[in-house]
Image 1: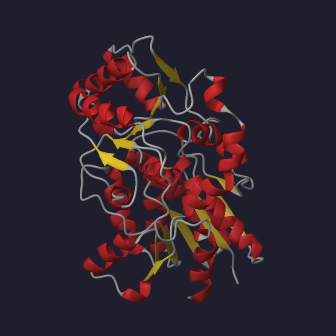
Image 2: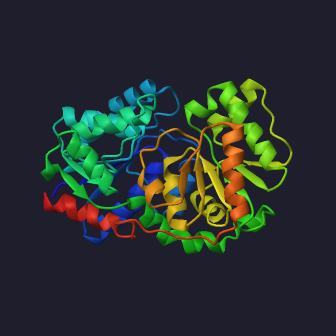
Amino acid sequence: MAPLLHLVGARPNFMKVAPVVRAGAARGLEQILVHTGQHYDDTMSDTFFRALDLPRPNENLGVGSGTSTEQTARVMLGLEPVLDRYRPSWVVVYGDVNSTLAGAVVAAQKRFRIAHVEAGLRSGDWSMPEEVNRVVTDRLATLLLTPSRDADRNLANEGVAAGRIQFVGNVMIDTLLRLEPKAASLRVPQAFNLPPGRFVFVTLHRPSNVDDPAVLRELTLALDQLAETVPVCFAAHPRTRQRLAEFGIQLSPGVLVLDPLGYLETIGLIREAGLVLTDSGGLQEETTVLGIPCLTARSTTERPITLTEGTNQLVAPSRAAILTAAGHILTANRPHDRRQPEGWDGHAGERVIDAILRV
């Protein structure tokens, strides 16, 4: 069998590919790992490979930063000769980042089979670049590997043949469950003088929240006001830091602003938080499994299972909405209620490999 070629580019991909690579190695499969370099600095990339025990990539395309169009084009140009060299049996793409779309387009044009891990998720919000990426990738993929049953229904409603859809569960939760004990042992909240169970952990990076100065100002005012009564820890994405500087927005001294954290450090903080405020897709899932209340500053989510079976709530990105919702959660003082939706059991990576080998 020709090798499986795994294509990753941004940090959410790294947590998803790790259990699939482990499962493939356990089966003795030849595997090629290609890193597009979409996330290119050490904090956003190399640190994650080390924490996740991923092998060094066989290829790094080094595409770097740029607009969505620029990144997509660079990945396409860099990937074509790599596919010609390795002639993989499958090109496996993950999630919904620019690298995912670029990989699917090149693989389809060159007639390689494509497996899309985390297929079928839909927000219905076409202003999100990720929605475009995942819909087009699903149209091109040979095998659609879904993390939840709602994703199966989305694909069926779009006319996808049942034989192309395979429910496998959530591969990112494989990584969370495997590494949570190690993350807990780091005692990250204590390192930042944060009282376990009584602080708010924040991440914000989506263009709709950070590229509009009025919206970003509302969000930061909410953080400032929250910090008057509870410790607030804000892991600021480089994009968000840049926008804060451009717009002349300064957070109050009560908000602890951190550089982007490694995976283990992030999980170490999430699992001890009293509340998470985010616009990240992955954190919606991780907080569900860890039982941590989550407010997602968006009007839609492609992960509705975190609303119906998890701990997630959607909230408008406004000071009033966030403070009201956070106040209800923080005063309730309920014990953490861990959840396990179907297939979020730590074995999704094995099911991905099983599904590929069955075809």
